[in-house]
Length: 356
Image (cartoon, rainbow, N blue to C red):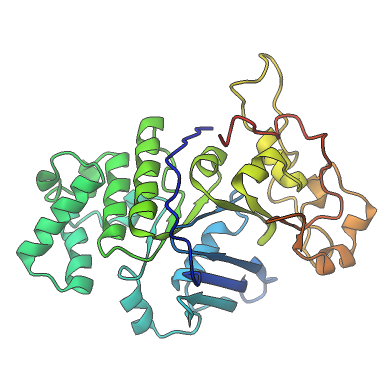
């Protein structure tokens, strides 16, 4: 785990949230098969200048949530419900023309794999200037100058030369920076970053996280950070939502979450991380089983088959359908019948040094 602590936020988080997600559901359906509830009643909001983290194992619904917010899910075989409001305006059900006008200009997304997200047959400069032509109506010279400035801003050396190169000629870190440059081209009010530091070395990861933090501080952008890296969460996010099997099961301020995880799943994630301040030879405590070992929420708590705290009442229809995300102290929400108790905590779960 890489822990990157960055400067504190500026105090511009006032007024109405930029993004409000309310009871969002995403269901994939194929003929002859049971429907898959990838996202099941997710609700959260993001204010200007705030960084919110969506955390969980692969397959818990983080990326599908982001694609639903951006309106990038396919229409066929997918049912999306609930509400997604950007600056008070409903996005679900909006026309393709409206969404195309908003993407890039008002809200942008940095995708997980830059190599597959960039067009391999088109130079980087053309892909960056396309955003400027579409949303800022610049001349060619103005767009090229701005694209050069953007690449320089994200730390790409010799940006004028890089504009003429193709994605395969750039390193993984440079490709990720180029994606971020495209996302920043129109100074969006909302930025969604889906695993932006995956497969990058520690130095490049720290630089990209610092760049994202500067964006939030300088322009008051609302940032949604999707990651499974708890070090990224510890150094970047203000509030954290832990997802499992399509639902948010714990929400808290990052410091409180690291110091006192209440959901056994959150405690398990933290206990699975190697600690620099731990004793040598102490084994890790991974969560048993895999993310596929779940039961439907309609039959009980989806995490119950893997949970060391599970009891008989966790494996009932009542537990799955009626245990809501409830207040668990100031600024905390929790979905669990048998949470972790304190001062006892799971081995490695407390993170006194992780979120400093």
